[in-house]
Amino acid sequence: MDAIEAIKTRRSVRLFKAEPVATEMLEDIVDCGRLAATARNDQPWEFVVVTDAALRARLADVTEFGKFIARAPACVVVLCREAKYYLEDGAAAAQNILVAARAHGLGSCWVAGDKKPYADRIREMVGAPAGYRLICLIAIGHPAESPQPSKRSLDEVLHWNRF
Image (cartoon, rainbow, N blue to C red):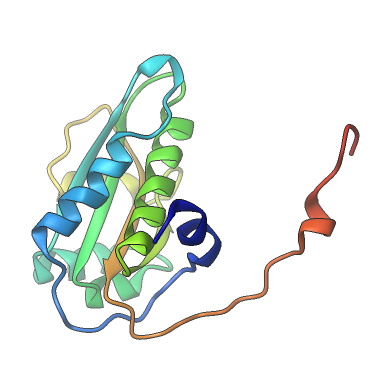
């Protein structure tokens, strides 16, 4: 699947098959996150891939809207060290991961992390040192659903020269 198709067909998937995701596929997906745009080439990110079911269940339990992480075969925890543009850089890496998962035929869903009350707890659960910020958690797996939420049309959001 080419990049344009992956971007245009990516949707948030919260229901996954029990089938595991190949390690090589997860490595390639995270590699795409590593190659994201970054301010001043700072590259503040670190990625923890959680495939252990018990740890995924504990992560899911502390989130507000990420209970489905427990049923996903993998969860990528995106963290960034303190840096001026940590949030922008981490979000760019997360978006690359979401698109790469789709390109591999997988489903994924972003679960908020930064500014959430559980952020430090999750950071500690995955063993990240102090000074790192949780950007998000990304559930990844073979989709067991094909969500088709409506998206605003291009005519509604595109402006030429002025708003």
